[in-house]
Image 1 (cartoon, rainbow, N blue to C red):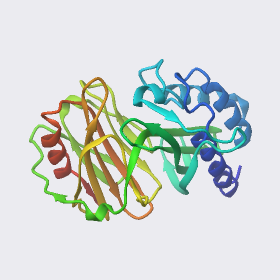
Image 2: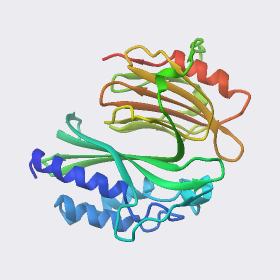
Image 3: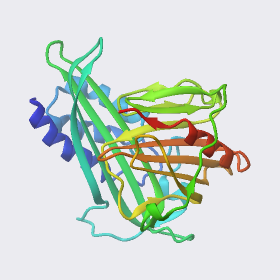
Length: 298
């Protein structure tokens, strides 16, 4: 498969993942259907099917990471009706890029695609859209026949802000001395040590080995307008070196905890930082400390 052909196919592939009929299911048990469809569409060897299955089992296409609970149950929404033969998702934006891999196990082009879509929903608190962002990457080494796949997905009900530039600006404090610095490409973030060491991929850092969960993700998408905000209690704009726009938010998480999130935008590229399992009292201080450790070096 040539890089040009892979780019075109991957655009359609990422839109299929975005608009999957499995989106609202309570678990990820049917992810194998996505694997088989993508293997066929991408035109790669069926020997790679188990690898696709493993990828989508680790990062759910549908349902929550906790298992047995779907997005409607977790977030308390009802999807609005849509035509049975029409799209579930309204595509907001999509993009692709080709980057070079130089790893011991694979050397060659990595084709990345990102897409963002919105599903009309109804909630008790007035949020009317479920915004879902997906990134998928495929790298092929023609010489040894190996492949690398990466995949990330996030989804949450949102309200929309007309102009994020109108938000009040908050000042960062300082990074505590015992925090650890992590890097995703040229994006630098410092986090508390109790988030543990991350699993690293070409689209993000996933923190699940520590006492709390967190992630640092990258997608090839610009800041949308109007700007979507999830279950947010506090939101403000921040100044991050190298960024065109940075929005920090504290909102409700799972099981009575809070989530601290920062979205950092630069051109057609977005980095997101999500820290989960945070108490209500520590969330504002943690948000200011996280902002102090963010920068884009490119």
